[in-house]
Image (cartoon, rainbow, N blue to C red; front, side):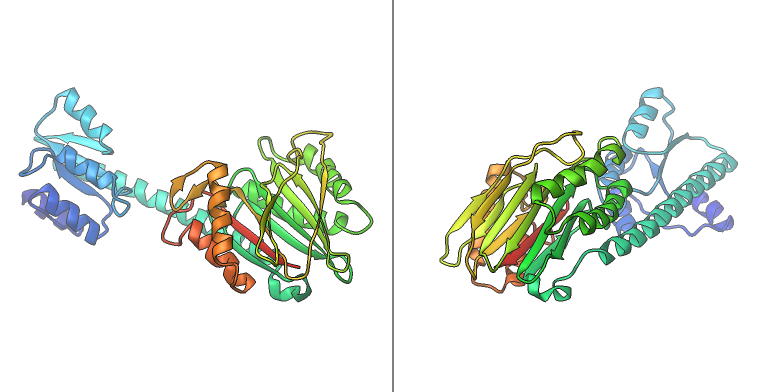
Length: 355
């Protein structure tokens, strides 16, 4: 009570609790800048309460200072190991307590300012990245639908759709290693490179080789791209594919069959002289094609799965919603694998194309 009155006199707003359970509940309901926590309390000790605070998303970032009559080194180590930022022994000088409270609140607010600044930068980057991603309504003749859900606002996944002439469309899907600003900036470079090199003057193998020639010397260390380029000629009813370490493509036939189309190819940026092969398959009007990133086949409803299991799950989802319009199909299939209420572990991208 004396400490409470002293802190109020110094201008702090105080919330008190008589034990750990009450303190934990109040901290969840009323976000605070700092928690002063005794070690010896009714019901549970302060170490147990601190662990619970640090395991709760609502309170884990709030700094905790222990106040304890115990001054032995072991208790200090236990307290700091639990996640506390400081440990003050009783009897204490109020001037020392005030100094430490102010220091840790200043540190917390400085960290919050850094986080807010980074969030603002991320939102700006997200807006810029979203602006370069083509939307289905912008290219109605391409007959595509996209479900794109970046992990951190600015994602490492990338796609593009390019008109290559009447009845011919190019589709490109890529997954850039890393989910930071550097990986996201690569997408703008990819956009420009594709517009220069993805055309009917080059085969798909030549296009991928040209992309690699530009990217290999300039990509940051550790940044690689798995990619798939596709050229669909609706008049000739022919699909050409080139894979660069990319997952396979689903081919949902108009009669209901579902094939998995894959091919060999080196990651973009990994080697100065990569090897690619072109895969060609016949298609019919009404067929649907699905290009997807690793995020849809490495987890299933919050659990990690093998790629083989993930492909099976995704194939089942595609079959389940095959009767839906294309945009509904890609959305429902993606939600089936990674529901909105589940924390995604990677970028989610599913690109659907109708022949």
